[in-house]
Length: 108
Length: 115
Image (cartoon, rainbow over all chains, first blue to last red):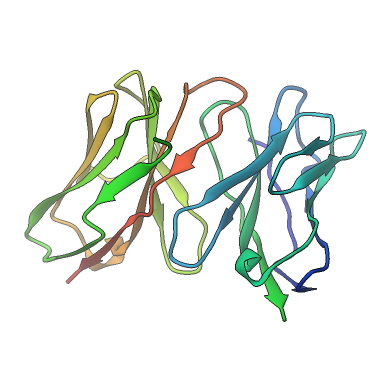
């Protein structure tokens, strides 16, 4: 399984866009990039996934570089409730290996 | 219903006790997962069931015994646990295991304390 690298923590001002980077330089051709987040003491929550094209849903946007070696999760207007640990995961099938994640602090 | 439920929410047990954790989903998912999460660490995959058959066992000690009686239900039987097994145990489900695209839905977890 491809390994991911994320910064351990980031800060973001409330109402601003939060841009969370992820490196996955060993990703292979048919592996998807997934993003989950975990708010304190809750189960992880799926956010978005992508293969090679940029994706957007009601929660976030995912930008994947053309060589697929890195991606960025964008929360367009961060709120205090977006404070959480964000996990970038690359996996094929069901063997999901979580990396250390990025702890995002959204500040008022 | 897009929810994965887990019971109990909290469990305290002694090292000689036998207890079980329960997980349930009614989304028609055919893959179910157990994860273990220690404080300030990411979730670690323990077991994967696909179509009620055990597909992955991540070298988990035999004191943890999973069971999938039907496609909606997943149990984790606990026996002779150690204090270091204290953790948050998370259950998840997805449509089908083994496909390239596989969004998982997680339950809230059971917080287990072993005395």
